[in-house]
View (cartoon, helix red, strand yellow):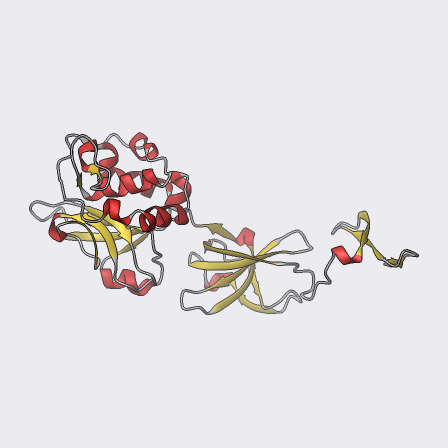
Length: 292
């Protein structure tokens, strides 16, 4: 109910979802809900995996059924936003990669995709800002391949250390992420491999054990998936059946999920460059490791 007070204000008498009286509030501090108790829309833009096959997916908060989670179980989709409903549940607004709206689902039927950024203590904007604002410090750093001294392959041309400028593929990744605020020691501490944070095999082991990732068997399949976002990590697993096998790692640098752009350090490209996506050696599979 409400009271129109002598002072000219209208005061609402409000209750929580359990029927407990909260008190009186000036109506000007509230907004009438137009979506059946759904409440305010909040932007989210996070990927989630639909884990359960036992949830209804709703068209609206009048509980008109739109679909069912069994149709999307174990699929990763984009939660563009959410509503904290009056009933106490959070409902995600889900979209497929092609922009098709799936509907609203109770958040408890999903799990948040675990990104590399959360594991390393940063977010996507940190690495994008670091590379965009300091591109001249990294680009054209010459390639150096030795892992004997990790610091020797973590030396950008714009701020070289005592070894002079030089990156291997992973030295670039480690340096850029460290400079963006990432705790790269988590990678070194998660593996006993040689080369520490300058060895991509160590990044593979640490990230695949602690974050979500997608596996592809061609660059074309990766680009068509719609899952890549600027700043994500791309790791090429070596083809161990070939001579002189090696892995490779870099940042996806497309402005759209299907733009073929890659920021990496490789001998084949002549050092640190932004090129099309490729590995200088044969690969057996590709891991796309989202930043968030």
